[in-house]
Amino acid sequence: MTPPNESIPNASNIARAELDNGITLLVYENAAVQSVNLMGSLQAGSIYESPVQNGLASLAAGALKTGTVSRDFDAIHGALEDVGADLGFRGHVHKVGLSGKSLAEDLGLLLQIAADTLRQPVFPAEHVDRLRGERLTWLQYSNYDSRYRAAKAMREALYPDTHPYHYGTYGSDDTIADLRVDDLKNFHAAHFGPRGMILVIVGAVDAGEAMGLAADAFGDWRNPEQPAVEQAAEPAANSEARRPQVFLPGKTQSDICMGVVGPPRKAEDYLAAQLANSVLGEFGMMGRIGKSVREEKGLAYYAYSRVGGGHGPDPWTISAGVNPDNVELAIGSIVEEIERLTSETVTDEDLADNQSYFTGRMPLRLESNEGIASNIHSMESFDLGMDYLAHYEDMIYRITKDDLLRAARHYLRPERMVVAVAGPVGSDS
Image (cartoon, rainbow, N blue to C red; front, top):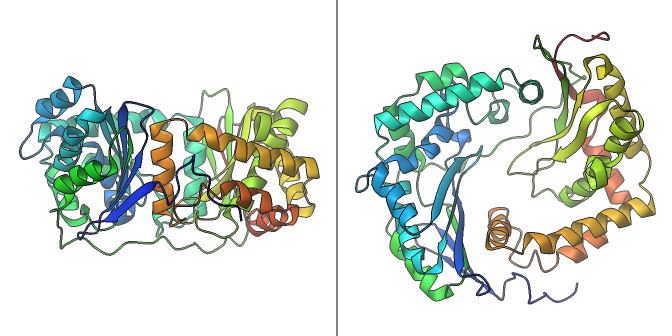
C-alpha cells in the first residue's frame, strides 16, 4: 500500500480529540478559503422513536432553531444573519445531522449557537405548529407524487413493520398530526446527548483554537438518560418477489422502484457493490440500465440504480419513470440487466472505466470545506480510519471483476426483489 498523500486529509493532518463526555472532535486546517464549515451528528434519529410517533425525531431536529432557554427565534436567526452564517439540523434514521458555515472569525459564535440549540431548545408551540403544518402539507403533496409513492411502497414491502427502515423519517399524516410540544421535549430530554456525537471543523482556523472553542461550547454537556446506541438488524429475506402497486388516477407517468436489502457501509464488499452498481445504473448516462431501458429501447424517462450504504441494511434500489403502457417491458429489461450482472463478469473496459470514475471524482469532492468535512465525518462515523482517503485509490484498484460478480450475486436476487409501481393503470396492468 502506498504511503498517505499529504495533500489530502489523513491521520497526519487531521487533529482528533475525544472529550470526556463522549464527543469526538476533528479539525482540518484549510487556509485556502477564509471560511469554516461544521459537520456533525448525534445519536437521536428516528430509530429511537416508536411507530405511533413516526416523524418525531425529524420534527424535533427541525424545531431546534425555533427558540432556546436563552435565545428566542428572532435572536437565533438574527445572530446568524448578522455575520452571514448558516446552521441547520436534519433528522435521519440513525442520527441527527448538523451543518454550519461562517467566516473563520465567527466560529466561536457559530459553535455557541449550535450548542445552545442542541442543548437547550424550548420548542415554542407557535413554531412547532407551523413546522407540523408544513410537514403535513409536504406529505399531502407527496402522496400524489408517483416517484415518492413507489419508493414508499417498496420500502414498506421490503422491511416488516417491526423494522425502523419500514418507516420514512418524515412520518405520516396521522402520526405527525398527533405530535405535540411535550412529545418533542420528552424526546429531546431522553435522546439528545453528547455520547457518540461527532463534530468536524474544516477551514481557515488553527486546530488547537478550534478544539478549544468546541470544548468550551460542548465540553460540559451531560445527559445521563441518553440510551445505548440502537442498531438496525438485517430483515429476513423475502421468500418470493413482491409486487405492490399504488393506483394514482390522473397521472400520465408510472414510476417503478425495485429493491433488495443492500450492504451497510461497513460491509467488506461495500466498495465492490458500489462499483457493480455503477456499472448497472450509474456510470455515464446511468450505466447499463440507462443505456438499455432509456436509450436503446426508449422505455423510460429516467432509469438508474443506487446503493444506500448507511449504518444499517439500507436498500439497493433501481428506479425508473415510464409510460404506463411500458411498465412490464421496462421491468423485464431491468431484470435482464440484473441477470447479466449476476451471471457474468463485467468487461475489462467496464471495470477500468468505473475505477477511473470513482478515483477521479474523489478529488472533486475535496475541493470545498464542506466536501472535506463530509468525508472526514464519514471516516469517523463508519470507523474507516483517518487514512481512508489516502488509501482510497489503492483500495479501488485492488477490486477485481470477480469481486463485482460476488457482490452482485450476494445482494441482487431478482427472485426476492420487491418491485413497486405507482401510477395510473396501464394497458399491461
